[in-house]
Length: 413
Ligand code: DSN
Image 1 (cartoon, rainbow, N blue to C red):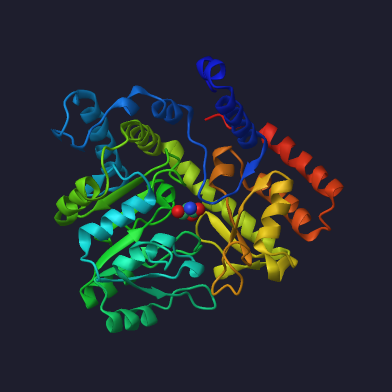
Image 2 (cartoon, rainbow, N blue to C red):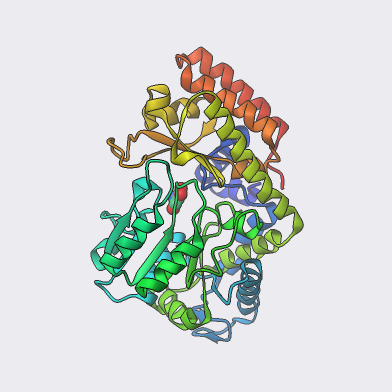
């Protein structure tokens, strides 16, 4: 809860904070990349570590007064390595985008080729979308998914043989199937490419051992700490030892300045939580909840993309399923207190601001303690909102059901 000091000193900020706190409390968060951090993580974020400049790394800083920041960053690194069985961890990236950019900077020269997944097929902006600055620095080539939602690894291999990428990139922000890590590693080896996986979305599921880990298969693995991993907003890079020095140098001084030590403290707390047995149960439940969602929408004959889900999220073609654009579907669900995001579907004929689908995820619902029965109930509400006429009265009735469910499953971990 916000402190009294903020309430007295800055009413405008306090009012917005209260509004957001309430929005999160009385609504269902189904944006696949969002979650609720624990009270302990929140506390670590709001600490005096934010006052400190700590350019450099533990034991090698450019400013004095680092006895406690060194403890925090070392703890965060050691916990991260233990959690993912990694040889090296850099916990300073401020976000997933910065982690990816730093990895490119460490591994490549300008003009080098990166082979990554197409955005509309589940990839990510930072994997080479033409609107990004990185696309001006490196030559990105994109692979796509097949009509059944899988990746054809023979085609991927042929593309890699033709394009000779220096970096073969796996990972996604809206792809719902499991990648074959061994095949990526084999193709990388065959064409002499460094292999990198961006596991931002599934990092928590990997930490919980609910999904296989890409860490043993890839040279470099980037991630964000705030999605399924349920930590503070930020990024991280894991890598094999031979890449460690280049990665550290690329993060600082290559790309970033002073690390945000309060966030690194919160990362340490979150990794500590993820090392506990409860987190394993959480990860398994996330997968079960996503499957329950898929089962429901399949039974309703909605068009579930990529052939279903093997992780924490689902992609629905809302134009084909409900005659609603992604933007319209997002607005309908917003009106009943369910937050999702509109999303491009493979080779979407519509634009990114009003695409053909929505992406729906269950990590935040699962943090509230919801299981398959509640997910089914939520899916029924979603179905009623999307398939109904969308009248104000109808949506208000559904919103009340959402509020009741939220009350029964408060955010209190
Ligand atoms: N914006 C994130 C997501 O929603 O997946 C990816 O960076």
